[in-house]
Length: 67
Image (cartoon, rainbow, N blue to C red; front, side, top):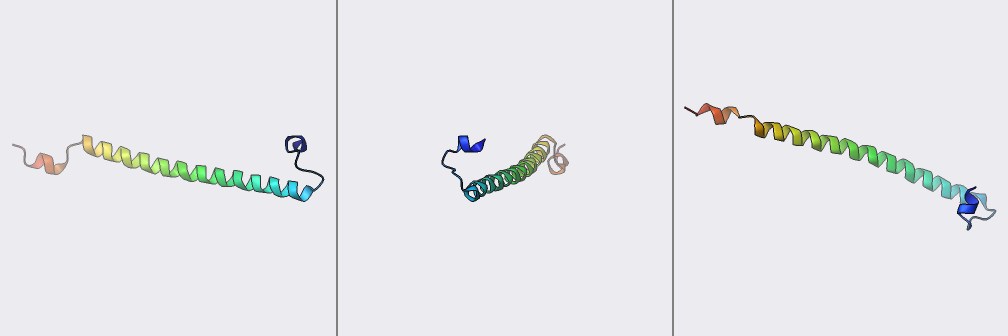
C-alpha cells in the first residue's frame, strides 16, 4: 500500500487524496506536453526534409541561363 511508501501520510485521507490528485494532474499534463512536443518535432522534421529536397533538386532559375 502507498502508506508504506509515503510514511508521512497518516490517517488524514484528504491529504493523501490531494497528493494523488496532484500526481494524476501532473501525469496528464506531462502526457499532453509530450504529444504537443511530438507534433512540433514532426513539423520541424517535415520542414527540414522539404529544405533538403529543395537543395538537392536544381531550381528553374539555376537551369534557365545554362548554355
